[in-house]
Length: 166
Image 1 (cartoon, rainbow, N blue to C red):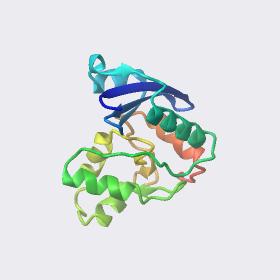
Image 2: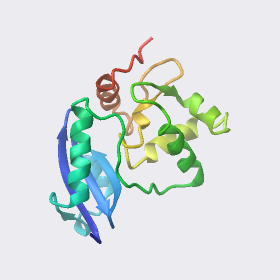
Image 3: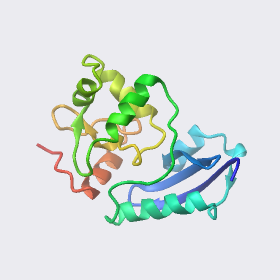
């Protein structure tokens, strides 16, 4: 299907808005506020029957039910080369495990870029699929997620059985 379509899934982390553009998952938004802020809603068509939206909704349901650890959805993240390197590294963090921002900085060879790692996480338009929730503070604390919404990060890490607390 050509064009931009969206739908909404209901999860333990809140409403998740799924945006498909030209047959590729373009964005996931946790909460209506983020969705309305991140998208030109007038350019989108509500279409819960779109086959990729159905597939994405099913995989999200399986994830939140504890039956899915990896996603098989076509994505094409748009960002800088630095952001793409960060996101690629995030995808290598196993289900239920965490890494620090500093760990990610070292893995991509940018040891001093810890703050920039946080900004790349913030720019991630595909949370859960690109698991930025698995990145925590060096001291094992939950730090910003979608701005300052650490409760979402906590829900996702708990769902994955992560032992992130010291």
